[in-house]
Image 1: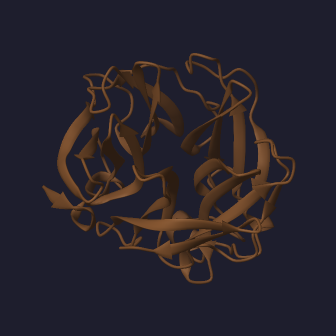
Image 2: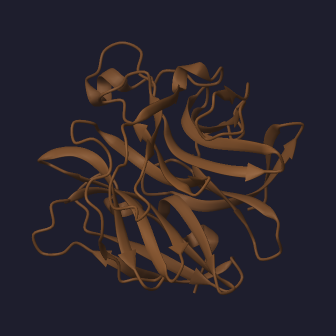
Length: 294
């Protein structure tokens, strides 16, 4: 067993099934190089975890050999669907779905590529509106220097896109977001380069909110937006100040077994040192704030 602050993952995601917590994420040790699998951790109290439990291992001949990023697990009826980013040295990053009959896997490839072949796309999350599934994802800065957050309608079975991607907003629309200072040195990209990642859409009360990550004045940060229309299509109004301003991000919202609204993210954002952190989430007059717990 290990404590939450001993689990070494990025991009954490939590699912509660039959009174148990299941924690998923990007393996820190293989995030930036060759990669071949995903894990989960299981807990009865959300504090002490057993694992890692390998839930997916790269099959022989599978195209993806890197960018095994941001797995999010959804229970739909009696099946479990893992929305993931995959990449390879032969093509651009994209978003796919794996499937299993158990939250701890094993998961197997299920869908084709959901995002456009010619786009570099990362960090997909699902949201259902009026019974229709949508994929919200980041159109990565390799293609879009504005840092675009996009939405794509999916087929009911999540196997394929059912339309064309639409722009929700760009990172530069948020007052707190700033260009990445190392774009030229690290990626060879000139000019101002913004990015978005880690979207999470949730409804609370009469509001629909989207938490997402970008670069702020003090590094990697989390911001919030509220849908003016109450629809996932927006328009999205950006909160003035970030909700988590420094060296942490890519989170998701959940309710614990006591019904409390929580936000889970990784901190710090330093390579190979990332850990899950759980905060309490509050909304006051439409403004999202976090209260640090651990």
